[in-house]
Amino acid sequence: MKISPAEVRHAARLARLELDEEEVASLTPQLDQILAYIDKLNELDTTDTPPTTHALEVVNAFREDEVRPSIDRQIALANAPRTDGEAFVVPRVI
Image (cartoon, rainbow, N blue to C red):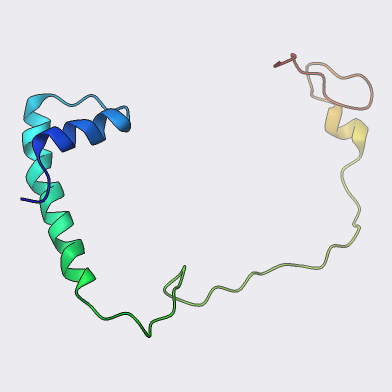
């Protein structure tokens, strides 16, 4: 067995999860199967495999940054509960 119930409890505590004993008993074999599968994957020779972040090539779809007309300020502020004439007024957070 790769993981013990004590390690499951420890990992749960680190993740700030409260698990009862039934959940620990249920999760221990499940996590053990996951770790066994990872060990199986670690048996593969990946020395010539480049690291990737995505299975498929990802291309950013950036558009040109160009100035375009926007909504009029007075229209944008029209339904705001409070404004100072130029911006929304909100309660201070800090």
